[in-house]
Structures are given as structure tokens and as C-alpha cells.
Image (cartoon, rainbow, N blue to C red; front, side, top):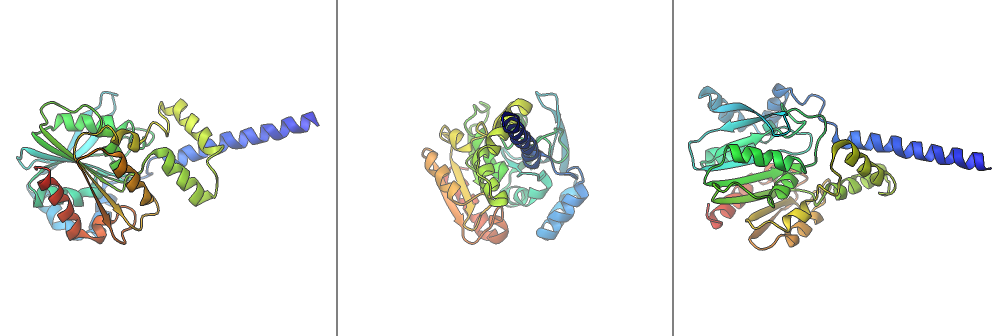
Length: 306
């Protein structure tokens, strides 16, 4: 009987360990064809046909520049940069398994319609940036801060979508370059924490409770990557943000449930604004309400002094 019990226990432990490795890879593995920029541009133009003439115009003037820097970690990271010659710069942060090209539609809003320079980083293990595992925004916040420091101007805005919004909120509590006199943040459909997001997806996709798999995966992430799902907490960091922040979320978002944005909004101290895009699914608030999206962002920045 003891042998049978030990054997069963061993099988259970092996199943949990194996499941943890699978879950971590499922959650943090980069997009397989992440460096195929041609596919990214094709996807962008199919979804936003109005982007093609703007991108073509920038290319004809050699104004859409690929920029590479070496991060403090030693990794080589990539960003797209558009220099408008302005004292205002927008840093746009992409989502999970995306790349900066996917969010050029936001760059157009800032560069063409509002006169900003635009910096669009490829996050760690995304696009043309080096890295083996997605970081869910936690260590990414420091990479974005590095980009912000390199391209700092008097006035800046950091605008992120999905995981990029979580990155933006985590960054918002960091000490910022002294030369930046005015900075604002826009968080579009960001999650409260990586733990909350993975817990929800574990239930939605696999019908499983958080224990024991999520707990084991969390520990494995800490051992392998040096950070945990609990570390990647936007809701904890946003409590310490003293700068203006606009929260955007689709009312029909089920991937990052709309309920999360209300918790984030409540956690943020003063100097905040909330816009719920009616009927919009995850990361589709702009696609569903283009004019209103632009109006909400523009009015937020104007009201906040930009």
C-alpha cells in the first residue's frame, strides 16, 4: 500500500511539474515568426487600410527609422522612431506576442494628428528585439524607461495596449528623467496583474482552478526568469503613480475582463480619467470607435496641459 501511495504521489508531482513547464511555455513563449516584419505590415494594412499611404509617405522621406540600442542587460533591442522635430514625444507600447508594427495606427494619431515624435519599442522577446521569454510587462517597464530616457523631450506620453498597458502602468511608478517636465499615461485594456490574467485564462481555456498548477508555474517562473506573476502587478504599481492617466477598456472584453479596469481606476490616486468603449472586444477600442478614441485621447492630453 505504501508503495502504491508513493507511486501515485510521484505521478501527481510529475504531472504538476510537467504541467507547469507547459503552462509557462504557453504563456511566455515568443511569437514564432516574430521577426517577419513583412507579415506584420501586411496584417496592419489589412486591418487599417488608411495606414498604407501614411507609412508610404514616411518611408519616402526616410522618416520611419529602425533604431537599435543595447539595453543595460546587454540585449540588443529595436524600436521604430519618427522624428517630427517636436518637443513632445509619444512612446507606444505593444501587447502580448505583438510587435511595434502592429500599433503603428497609434503612431499615426500622435504624429500626423497631434504633432508628436513617436518611439515604438519592440519589447523583450518581441519583434526584432532579443530575448527568450515574454516578461508580462514587469521587466519591460525598465526597458521602456530606457527608451524614454534616450528620446526624452519636455513633454511625453506613454500609451500602451493590453500587455503594453500593463507595462505602462508598471512604469508609471518609476522615477522618471528630470528633463521630462510633463508626462502622461494612457492604459488601453491592461490587466491588474499577470497572476489575475493567468488565473482567468486557466479557468476559461482549461477549466482549471489556480491550485496547484498556477502556483507551481509561478514558482518556476521565479526560478527560471527571476520574477513572479505576482511581481507583474499593475494594480500595485498604479497606486503610486502621481501623473495623469487615461484608462481605456472595451465593454465586451473577455480576454482582459472589463471588470479589471474599474479596479485599476479605483486604485489610481487623483488625476485620472476612464473611457469605456461600448461593444469593443479586447484591444479593439480604436478599431471599433476610431473617431471617439482619438477624441478621448486628444481631450485627455489637452485637459492635462499637453
